[in-house]
Image (cartoon, rainbow, N blue to C red; front, side):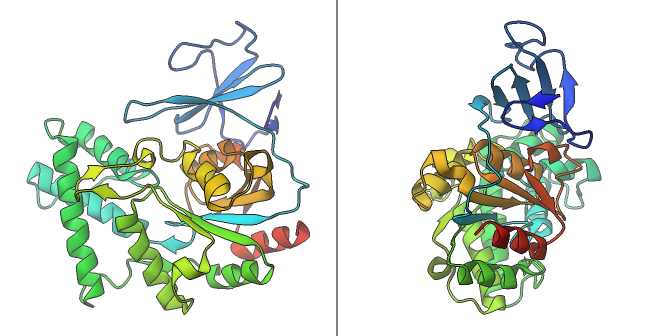
Amino acid sequence: MQIPGFGKLTGNSGFIPLESCLDGHFCTGKDGVKQIFRTGDGKVELIAFDDRTVAYVKSSMGYPAYYPVRGVSASKRIQAVLMDLDGTTVHSEDFWISIIEMCVRSLTKLPKFNFVDDDIPFVSGHSVSEHLHYCIQKYCPDASLESARDYYFEHTRREMQAILEGHGRTDAFTPAPGVKDFLLDIKAKGLKIGLVTSGLKEKAYPAIVSAFQSMGLGAPEDFYDCIITAGITLRGREPGTLGEIEAKPHPWLYAESVCVGLGIPADDADSVIGIEDSGAGVCSVRLAGCYTAGIAGGNIIESGTLGFCNEYFNDFEQISKRIAERC
C-alpha cells in the first residue's frame, strides 16, 4: 500500500495496522480514512487518506498531538546535517539509565533495585520527565514527579562532579565509532552541522564536552552551527521548556534546529539529513520534514519505526558516502 508522505509500505517497516486511533478520532474506512498504522512500540500512529497522512504522537505527560506528514525528497542537495547526541554521537545511555535507576532507589528506599530488560525502552531515548513518569507509574505510584526530579538532579550533579574531579565513571561518555572522522568530513564538505538532544542542557552539554575533549576537537560551541537541547531548568528543579513535554518523537527539537538553529526554511527541511539511532529520534526527524537517516546500534528495528527512515545505515562511513552523492 502507498502511504502519502511515506511511499510504498514495505514488510519490514515495523508498522502495525489498526482499526481505529487510540483516541477514537479516526477509524479505518470512515471519513476518508484509508488505513491506520502504529509503530511497533505504539508511540506514533499514522492516519492515511487518499492525498495526505497525519501522525498522532502520544505523550506520557498528557499532551499528545497530531502532525501533518510531509513528503521528503531524496534528490535535493544536502545543505546541513543534524545529529542526535546519546547513542548516535556519544555512547552514554548506560550512564543515564543508571542515574534514573538511582532515582528509583531513592524513591522506593530499595538500595539494591535494578531495572529489568522490559524497562529499558522507557528509560532511554525520551525526556527526563517522561523517564521518571514511567518509573513512578510502575514502581512508586505514591511518589511525585517533583520529588523524582529533585533526586535526578541530586544524583546527576554528584556523578558529574565526580567525573570532572577524575574519580567518577571513566566510561560515561564515549565517542561513537567513526564519529570523529565523520564530523571532520562534514566540516570539510562545507556543510552546516547541528546537535539535537532531548536531554536538558545540564546533562547534555558536559557529555559532548567530554567527548570532544577525547577526540581533540576543541569546544563544541565552536564546532557546531547549532546545539539544541530540551532546555535548562529554572531554579535548579523546575522544567522550563517545551522540550521536556514535547520531546522526541514530537518534531519540535528538530524543527527548531532547522528553522532557528540553521536558518533553513521549513519548506526546504528535506535538504537537511537527520541522523538518529532511536525509534523516537527517527520519528522526530521525519515529522520535522528532514531526510531521515537511521543508524544501527539503537532500537529502531526493535521499536518498529524503521518505516520512518528514508534510509538505514550500518555506520557513519555509509552515511558519509550517501551525503557525498548529494552534495
